Structures are given as C-alpha cells and as structure tokens.
Length: 363
Image (cartoon, rainbow, N blue to C red; front, side, top):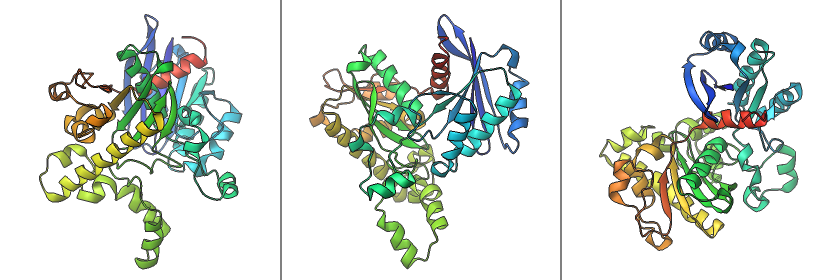
C-alpha cells in the first residue's frame, strides 16, 4: 500500500510518501514546495516526483474538524462543505487545507482521499474540561468550545510511550508535552485525550515561539482602551509578537538558550514555568500519572528545557537522571522515580498515513 500525505499551509506544501513494508507504513520519500501561490501547480510539482497511478490513498492534514469530526473522514463533497463551514474557527488554516484537498481531488480523481483532523483526538475530552464558563447560548451559537490541536502528535506520542514502557494504552495515563514553535500539553487518560492546553484556537495554553499562550482576557480590553489598539493589532500582538519573541526578541529556543542577557533568561523562566504549571494541573486531573513525554523540536532536542520544566517535582515522583537527559536516552527518569519521563520523536505525517490506511481498512 502507498499513501501520500499532504500538509498544505498558507504558503507551502509539505508531503511524504509512505509504503507498506513488513506490515508497517514507512516513509520512503518526502519534500516541500515553498512560496506557494498556486496549489494546483504545487501539487503537480509533487506528482512529478510521486507516481500518482501507484497511489492507494491520499491523507490530508486538516487543522479544524469542529465538533463534527472525531475520526478521519473519507473525503466527498459533503465533507468538503463541512470543512469549509468551519473556516470561521480556523481562518488561517482550513482555507489552505481545503485548497490542497480540492486540487488533489482534481488531479487524482480515482484515488481515495482522507481528511485527518488535528482536533479529532480531543473529541473525547469530557465536558467539564472542554466547556468555557461563558453564556451557554452564546457559546453554542458561535461554536465557543475547547477544541484542542496537535491531536495527531499527541495521539501518536502517547501510544508510542505506552509501547516504549510496555504498557497497555487502555490502562495508561501520560502527560504529553508537544514543545515546538507551537506548543501544547495534553493529559491522556487510558489512551484518550482528557484535557489539553490549546482551546478555541491554537493561541491558548503554553508560551510558544511567537504566541502568548494563557493571558488575562482583560488585557485586550485594557490595551484597546488605553493604547487605542485595534482588534486586528491585538490579534497580531498575541499571535506574532508575543511568546519568546515578545519577551526577548527571539522566537527560536536555540537562540534563547545561547544568550545570557536578562530578557532571554526571563523568557526561558516564563516558558518553563508555564509547562510546569500544566504538568501539575494535569496530575490533579488525572489522579494517576504513569509517564510524562516530551516531543517536537524543543521537547526532543533541549535537555535544558526538559530539566527546567520538571525541576523540584520530587514530591510528585518526578526525578530526572541527568546523564540520561543529556545523552539522548528515550527514558530519562531516574530508576527510583515513580513517574517515568520519556523523549519520543513525533511523527505527525506517519500518524496521518496510518489513520488514512486504517480508514480504508487496508492495514
């Protein structure tokens, strides 16, 4: 079986080709097209490398599936219309995702195509963890709900952590920390998302490269009143001029760690303190935590961040082994620690390929 995975963003198309080898789907090729203005042209460029006649399926990353989609969906006109209706909830992502879907259906009309949603894994979050305490009628009318994101990453990493520790995912509780330029935490209970830090949009939660994460909502009203900032300026402030970039002018954690000035030190402190806050909160929600797992660019590659995020948590049974943390071991907790701490590389494209294959009942 051969599955092409497409991730169509606002200005780029990332792709990976998977083939079934020894009952597993493995990546055999991949690449990206930058500065995309014509998705048809971009996909024709991809298909100049990938033989479309040999494809069994195409899996599309779609950021927002709303409350409707709790699993991958075989794409037809009805699914396209449903994703289009969700554009107000994901105006920066769903339009480009849809553009890729439409062009791929035109170029590969005989190949089954699936939409795999970032939000789907989080549809198992119970109401008490997914409901905002605002007027219920307003929330229902306008779709105000904690949807969560990075779902394919949290699903894959939580399952791989259970496998690494030889646990049954159905009895396994893990806190997954997806720390990249975008960052989110997820409490996974018995293999299912139970709480997550991102909410209506990918803005809520942890400090990110250029996004603020959690703030007091009154800050927006305050800046609107006293600084005369428009709602468009406030949107730009929180999404592109906040987070690490807002605190120290650098949105790359490698740059922050390479500096010794006060603003960089503060940025690191704020970043790690927010992660630690969510770890503690998810301990309280889950009751029992078997493991904590770091993933994505920062989580996989920064022992300093991992150490700072979990420092002084001995009372929760969290103790890192310093040598393992810095040596690249997959399990970095001390032998006597009650809670295992792991580093598991994420594979969102691989998860999309596997979910697409399962949808077609071929793997």
